[in-house]
Amino acid sequence: MRILILGGDGYLGWPTAMHLSANGHEVAVVDNYLRRQMCKEEAVESLFPVPDLQQRCNIWEQISDRRIIPHIGDLQQWEFVSEVFQKFQPEAVLHYAEQPSAPYSMLNRRAANRTLNNNLTVTANVIYAVREFCPEAHIVKIGTMGEYGTPNIDIEEGWLEVEHKGRTEKFLYPRQASSLYHTTKIMDTDLLWFYVRTWGLRVTDLMQGPVYGVFTDESGDNQELMPFFNYDELFGTVLNRFVVQAVTAYPLTVYGSGVRPGAI
Image (cartoon, rainbow, N blue to C red; front, side):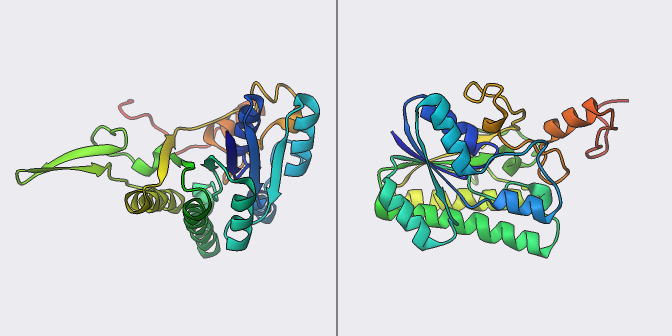
């Protein structure tokens, strides 16, 4: 298949691109280096340097003899979006292209606005691009279990059947975000579901759990092919942060009360 990966420079996007390329798919990646820019602005960095997307694609082609096509540009800009979609004509679109940090989204007004503008505008542009240029393409939107919050009932697989005053209806499971970032992910879900109903788009909204580490089958121990390993309080996943703190004998960051529920 022709698969377009949005956010292809990212922690999840780049390993996904290599994996699909290694399995014989025609892969193109898009990124505007937003994560790199935010890290620079906030004076945080990955544990080791990561080549830019063009360099990564070149290195991957050298070792695998398979090509990943890079496109550098901002998916908030419709002219760029339309150019990429018309040129590549994807059969599937993997959407990772969002400001990825809950802590960053809560940092200040500027960070909040950047999160809202980037995440919602990009999702809307992707919807319209698929509708206009490749309506049969399947959008895979990478959501997060954090959308659900911590409800006091079981979390169903996307849908919930509700009986109220003698009538029954099937609803998307209600979301209870605990950050602005997660709120934008809920808005993504609502946008996509609206256009599925309206235009019959093909969408999978995939709610992932935490991802950690840097090694994949495709990267092996080649550091130039590994994803970002952030360990700071803004962009470092909790487990990656704990690993670095444990190795350096630094006290682990306390989250919440620091006490396991039910512990004495």
